[in-house]
Length: 617
Image (cartoon, rainbow, N blue to C red):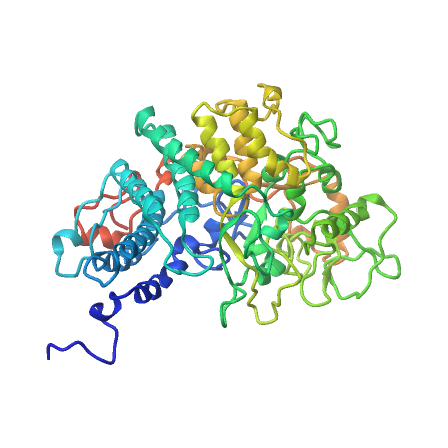
């Protein structure tokens, strides 16, 4: 009865040799922090839903739950889950008793520490104070199982300690290509150090010597990566829409869907259906610089209203940062063989380009830049095989009830960052690779950390931001030119240079899961109180007359603009004033942290609910 079973794996048989440790560790490469391109409960976080970049998962009467005080404290779940930590601790506790050499022990302890730090970073980002579990615990270990939460500052120090050990001790045990190595660890230090250093600073949690420790760690880790990864993929679009990211410049770690048997991802299918349920805002579009490297309000090449930033979409998009064209579908209109404008989705195998520049400019431009960089983002945008969208902006059917539910937007801007036509989506599963750590993020981490440490100058700008701008085909940042009036819409509480660094971060990392986290770490939750708006319409009646042909009873689907007969589409109203008879407070500071689930508070009376949330439902 005391013999080890021969027909099943046990602790005694798994944690023995190097190959067994490697096999056990594969499960952590689908960690929740690596949930890229997975259309799941975490998709709203990844695609910037609920931030000021996009309005996610909305219908016409929906609102941002974080600006309208609609977050519900979960009974269970909500991300409060320690199963990954438990599985990692099981492995870590059995390293010393294994047959591994000392070098192998150091390596697998380092890989385990990386994933443990990654998961605790995920938990601490959301919940703040979280119980730190040093070892594997069983149901019988009540003292550890129901312990109090570890204070945030102590937990943050422990995460950095784990990562620094991993960085200094990881080896090479034939883990394979695209696995955790010293570069991945430095990438996580770059990300975590910037996050925690700025969180502690702007939330007044520690002294400058304490939070600067994290900012310096981020700066140093980024510096090491910048020495090694000196080039970027030439096309911004290729970072997100390549069938293989193997050995591509600037890619540190990626998720390989092409070689995953029987499983891909749904991002291409959902992008070509309804943009992952996300609607880009005018606030995001306005943030992209013009080709001369200046904001739309001060640029000599912006052709719209420099006071308001308003312009019809076909004017607004001219002479802008190329990343805008790869993120939001540019405007166009196509015509059928009779010379009639196409509306909605059409099956025409060919189409006629109008001679009017306002209709065809971006059809031609996307042909040109896609030829240069080999991307798939040619216009018109395709829905399914042979079916194309006749015009952009293409408003959602619940605005004008066209009976066309795909490839539309509540505000007129359509997110297509993850759109391509090369991946087979007939089965619903696409196989483009997803970047997990890439130099685009590292460079902007370095720039921000340098500023926070008082070390940002033209040399740092050239080594970081200007490398990204060259790929975006816009003029370099010249630090000496960024004065208080460089952008008249700047948040006055933010230094002008830091504002431009944060702008660069916003457009480089849009819809990659950073924006809401950034707003929270900067303690700028009030950004979510802005009214989310869409495209500018110079004549509401012209648009209504067009749609009236398909729906005579248009009065049932009113279009709200920020002005009476012209202006930007209002996706939904402000949270700081009563709308639809509902008085809501706007952003509340409790939302900087997530609520703990009720069941866990009941099970463990040493846990405390985060401030502002009820202890029970």
